[in-house]
Amino acid sequence: MLFDSHAHIDASQFEHDRDLVIKRAQLNGLSFILNPGADFKSSVEAVKLAEQYDFIYAAVGVHPHDAETMTDQMLIELERMAGHDKVKAIGEIGLDYYRDLSPRALQQKWFVEQVRLAKRLKLPVIIHDRDANDDVLRLLKEEHAFDTGVLMHCYSGSKELALQYVKLGAMISIAGPLTYKNARKTVEVVEALLPSQLMIETDAPYLSPEPKRGMRNEPMFVKHTCERMAQIKGLSFEEMAKITLENAKQFFKID
Image (cartoon, rainbow, N blue to C red; front, side, top):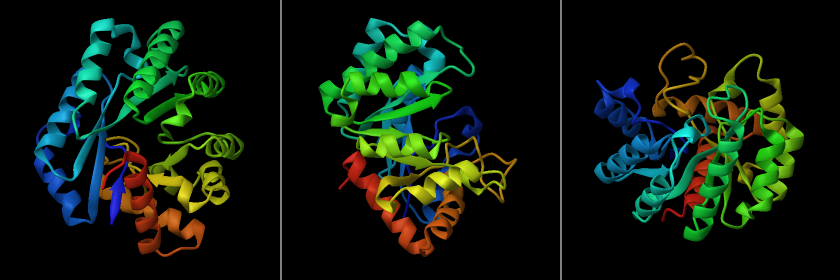
C-alpha cells in the first residue's frame, strides 16, 4: 500500500543491484514508485525504467545544480519525453542557493522555462527548494504553477511556509529526516498539515531514515517514514500508508 513519491533508482549507487532493489520494494509493500529526473541523462533513464516496470512512473526535468547545462534543444527534448504515458510530472526542478552549483540567474531562467513546459502539458511540477524559499514561492505564484499541481519534495522548511503552500493547493512530501531525533521542525510540519496534504518519499539513494541511517537508501525504507508520520498523526500504519498512496495517485493522475 506504499507509494514512494521520489526515488532516484536510476542513480549510479544502484548500478550493481538495481533489479534486486526494485524486487525488494515490491516484496515490502511498494505499490508505486515515482522516479524523477535530475538532469537530462537521468530523465532519459527514468523513462526507460518506467517502461520496464509496471509500478514505476517517471518525471523528467533538470535540477538547479545542472541549470548551467540547459539549452533550448534540451527543453524541446524534455517536452518530447514528457509526452510518454508513464511520465507524470516535470521534475525535479527548482532553485538551490545552498550549493550554488549553477549561477542563480540561470537557475531561475530554466526553472521558469520548465514550469511553463509543465503548464503547457498540464503536468504537475516536483520542486527542489534549498535556501531559496522566497524566490521559489514567488516564481511559482507568478507562473500560476499551482493550477496544474505543485509538489514540494523532501520538504525541510517551516510550518508557516508549508501552510502557505497547502493554502495555494500544493502537496508536501516528507522524507527520512522525519525519523531523526533532531527533526522537531519537520515534526511540526506534519502536525500542522492534514493527512490529505501529505506524501512520503525516500529520495533514495540519499537521506536514509532511522534505523537505516548511514546506509544507502532504497524505496523499501519508505515504510519507516510512514510509520513515524502515522505516529505523529495518531493513525495506524495501514491508514497512513493508504492515505499517502491515494494522495500520490491522485496528484500524479495514476488510475
